[in-house]
Length: 229
Image (cartoon, rainbow, N blue to C red; front, side, top):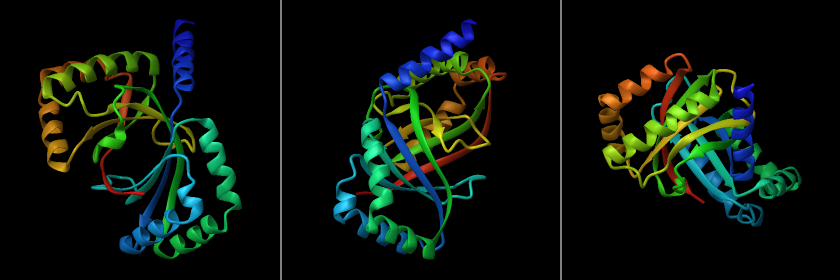
């Protein structure tokens, strides 16, 4: 019963502080043409009127994920996503974009994601993200341990001003994972250096021991910001 109440409280927290990120993941067969097509779409009146941030990311490397790139549109609230969805289906520009993208890429997945908890820093300020996709069996307990560890290790390694947190797909759920954690960095070398230090730190060993029965990491990848629109 306590577990149910805790999970309910977490979901109330999510929807009371809602921010939603749409991940449109695809395999780019001609990356330069994909970037050009996206730029053209975002310069249309339809693209300019999207109420949210718009960014193209590359997965380097992409692990077991077939996707090579991700178009991510983050909305400040439910109304902004609703307006986007309605206009997407009605816009000739959007439909033309999909048709052009199909010539240069293969769509892999669509998901709408929302944070359960993060440290309050704007992830739009980070350029590189370490992503950890996980199958979590006890979200409430895992979140408690994740919060405690993340705050301590960020302070110890000096990246407390970067964004980090844990999120889950509320639409378009992936069958392989239930949640994903992220750690933002300004560049690739900083992301790799901090990750190496984190994995060798006693705090990480202690955290891993505490959550070993709560989660299974199914994929890790680095997401690199290519362009903002």
